[in-house]
Length: 292
Image (cartoon, rainbow, N blue to C red; front, side, top):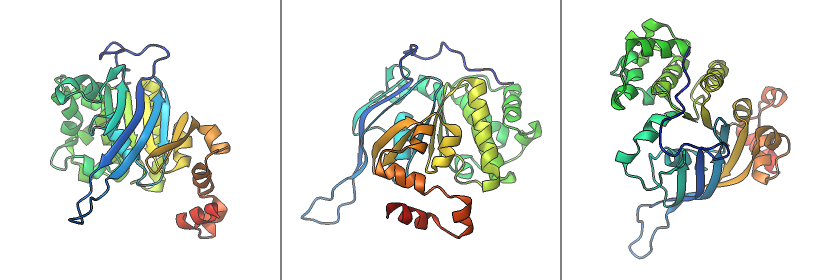
């Protein structure tokens, strides 16, 4: 049984009503390569004034199609990228312009699970060293007991620590990624499309594992997906993103049942159903039909 993270770590302890994450009018522009000597190339506007709040203990979903800015937003929340303008506040501390040396509290309290477990796990390291690495980097004792505890929590045997990532299936590798993220006892877990690279048969297992661990450890979850049905399964509240902007926010069930924005209605209409799948409809067919 994993112990919940202590409640007294990090500056800016949030109060009862204070959001654990606040994103305020965040914009992110990326320069493009110049293609003309006479004309400047306009930048890519990845985020266009995004604002949202995540409450402590909430399961917050971010949904949208590929290229809408979801992953860019997560990287900015985790201070792996910096916004062009706007403000990001995590646990009461403005991290927007903080230098890396002052982000130790964030690296401990906020952890990420990435989309592709094979590319996010070092193939040269044994699993026990991969899970212990965040503890070593952050100056915590990397005990074998802690590693075994984490392996057990994600449904893997203790002897899995002696093996390498390529010796596991995709679902097992994602379980290893989750164990690594939980190692330093974070309070915030960010999952960026954690099941999109997995076979359909194991997606539900990994989703249920994440859900159970979030409940057991009383974590705040920020979960990104392009699939609204996955978000509905995991999250309490959702923000719908389109072309770098948040177009709709609300309780997941409400957004799913009565979407108000045209783009959200398209997403809901494009969710595959058994009759349409049996009829051979593709995602492109569903989106085209929803737009008509």
